[in-house]
Every structure is written in C-alpha cells, then in structure tokens.
Length: 104
Image 1 (cartoon, rainbow, N blue to C red):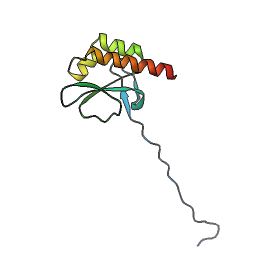
Image 2 (cartoon, one colour; image 1 turned 90 degrees about the vertical axis):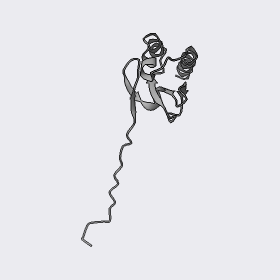
Image 3 (cartoon, rainbow, N blue to C red; image 1 turned 30 degrees about the vertical axis):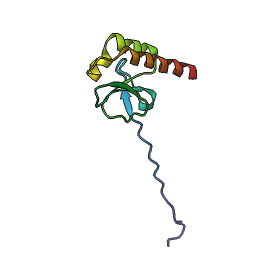
Image 4 (cartoon, helix red, strand yellow; image 1 turned 180 degrees about the vertical axis):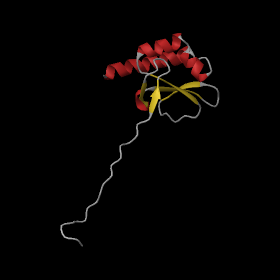
C-alpha cells in the first residue's frame, strides 16, 4: 500500500428521476403523483386510476377545480381519451380536488 492512502469507497448517489406528466387542461408539467390519472380501460370504460398502473389509454389532470372545469368545458379529457367522459367522473374529480384543498 502507498503511504497516506487509505481504503476509500466512492459512493455515487444518483438522484432518482421523478416522472413528469402534463395536465391535459392547463398543459403544465408536474410530478406524476401530483396529478389525477383517468383511464379508458380495456373494457372501454373510463375510470379514475389512483395507482397509476391500470392498463389502458390514460390522461392526466391537475387537482385544481379550475383545471377540471376547463377540461370538462373544452372536452380536452374526452379528446385525449377518445371517448366521452361521463358526468359522474367529473363529480368524483371535483370531490378529489375538494379533499386536496382541505388537506392543504
């Protein structure tokens, strides 16, 4: 061994890559966990996917009521999912947005 050199380990800590997704309504890119995912599943039904793992065509929307309203009025969610989004789904989205506001 050389003088003055100790056994050193070089620890290479990599930063974890945070997956970003774009809101259909406002177009803002945010971390996947901050958005709500809607899916048109293999049975051609639209559902809210809280896990982010359901198979099918997905679209993301912010947890803000303004974004949800805009997505409904402009039919942006329906266009991206290629199917009309039922009113019940929008009610569930508004409920999720309200619980999000209460938590903050």
